[in-house]
Length: 57
Length: 204
Image (cartoon, rainbow over all chains, first blue to last red):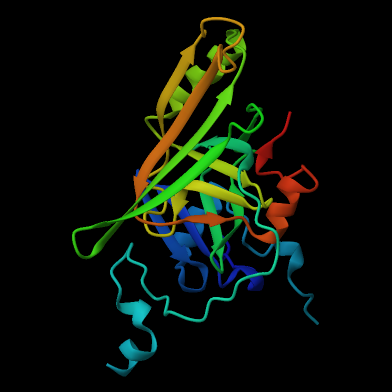
């Protein structure tokens, strides 16, 4: 799976979610890739889309 | 030591928020309208995550998780009562109340869904008299651990035509938690109150 990148305007946000029967809150600027993958699985919409990346060259 | 003085929140245990220093509070010169006008309810299992930005809910994850509830006019209310426990603890009790009518098969279906959803928990979206939306059942301290439950349902036929509340069903959702409810941010708020097309709600 490609590296998940949080959109710049969402970096100051915090997401509260449930995972494996417990609740967690993660600050997006400090989240690990493992935590971001869980958020992506849940469907939290805070990630840069591949087509939003700036063109190279 | 220096880091602890500059970033005290780094050293707070998980689930404890206490980094707000007292600052000046300024009152807005505007009307303040009492009451609540609308209520929407989501099952905890459907509203899977809340994104909080600067103390406001900026996104709710889930497929149209908040269901529109057509409650009777001026029957919706939400109370948030804080109470000191011992010397150092603070408990908040939320109570959301509203009336629906008439007793019918559809009313039973709605009630049964609340009964079935209550063990896992519920969140309520309340539109207050000022047009501000609040999510009750979620807070920054408990996160999703202390949602609302169905606290009661009360249906009486009443004794005759002169009883205004006869054949209405009074519903109460309640919880005890450690944090205050959060408002929606202005964008989500407008989508619920002004345009009525917020994707966090199921409208029809």
